[in-house]
Every structure is written in structure tokens, then in C-alpha cells.
Image (cartoon, rainbow, N blue to C red; front, side, top):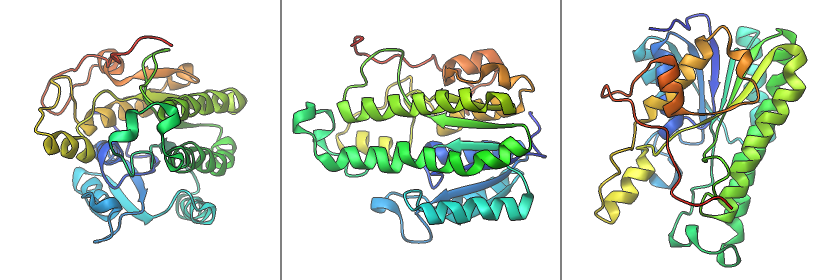
Length: 279
């Protein structure tokens, strides 16, 4: 068991899915975790189950301290108020997980269409509620981390080397997330702040499970839980030498082997390989 009882963390987009899995695993390690999202009480995104209130309760039940904050990360004032609150209440932030991602909203059969048939609002969602949201939160927490001469920023992205991700807006947005965190690593290096990217594999999120159930298909055997991603983040946050990884991109399956952790069922899924050819 890795001990993060002295760690103050912020996980964005944690109402459900990967964000929730990360937050809960940080709670299991004893961390104080601010969890953010737009879904509160009965007001959930596109009717998908999960709220920040529920996630915060799960964090506390796991052994940490969960703090739910309703926050739309496309609203700069809300994000600034969130960061101010963390600074007022704790005076520091040790871990930021940039997980928020609105790119799957409005998901339909057009997702894999050629770019000239893609709805333009998909591009907007992926960049406004994805790339820009990661940038906004990072630029606001950077002064705190620079002042404390340490901290870890984890960007949750997706990909497999130079392979095309199957959709031009998606591929471009995820590549931008990668490059954003690599650029931040370069500029934060003199302050001892780590910025890196983590690639989950095929994850059993609520949206993914519902999508497969809707067409009567079984999930791939390689699919893993959101908590598996959380265990990767916990391992990185507990690693005293994590700064040596700054600017890197790491698959969860590879991290599981390096840090010797398993999924919730005791398995250790292989690193995810995209079934597409390099561009």
C-alpha cells in the first residue's frame, strides 16, 4: 500500500469513469482529493450516471478525504475560484490530474467518419472541454507548484505511438494534450515540477459499457477498470524519483509492470495497442 496521506490532489472531470477511478484510488492511498465536474445531485451529463458528490463520498469511504466541487472547466472564473479555494484551504497542491474531457458528448455514428463529414461542434467540445480545460487548470495551479518547488501534473490522454487514433478531431486533440504536457514539462523543469502523460487502455467506463450493451457486443478481454488507471497515478505520485519521468508518455499497462500493481480483479492487462497503422 502506497501512502499519500500528506498529498493534496485535484482530479478534474471526476464524476465518473477514469476520473472517478483515479480519485478513489488516491483516496485508498489516504490522499485529500478535490474532485470536480458538472454533474451534481440529479443533474448529470447527458443522463450518464455519476456525480462529483458520489465520487467524493467514495474517496472518503476508501480512506482519504473527498471534497466535491461543482466546476465547469470551460468557465475560467469557476476554475480560478476552485484553485483559489485549494490554496486558501491547504496552501499547496501536490498533484493535478487533468482528466476532464467533453469530447465524447454527442457521440454517435459520425465519430469515425472522414473529417469532411465530422460535425464542427465535435472539434469544439474536444478542444474547449479537453485541451483548453487542461491548459487553463494547469496555468492556474502552476504558481502554487512553482512556489513549493515541486508537484506532479498528469495529463490523461490516449494513443499508441504514431498510430492514427481513428478520427481526425480526436487524433488532433489527443496529440495536443500530449504536446501540452510535454511543453509544460520543459518550462516547469527549473522549478522541479513534473508534467507527464498517462495513456489508459480500453477502459470499462460507464459510457463504454453502455455503448457495447446498446449493440449487444461483449467488451474486449483486454478491457480494464478505471481503478487500474488510478493505481498508475498513485504509483507515480508516490514515486520519489518521478521527476525523472517529466515530459514522458506512459501506458498504464507498462506502468503496472514497472511498479508491480494489478487491476481490481488481480490481473495485469497488457499495454494497449491501437489496431491502426501509423500515419
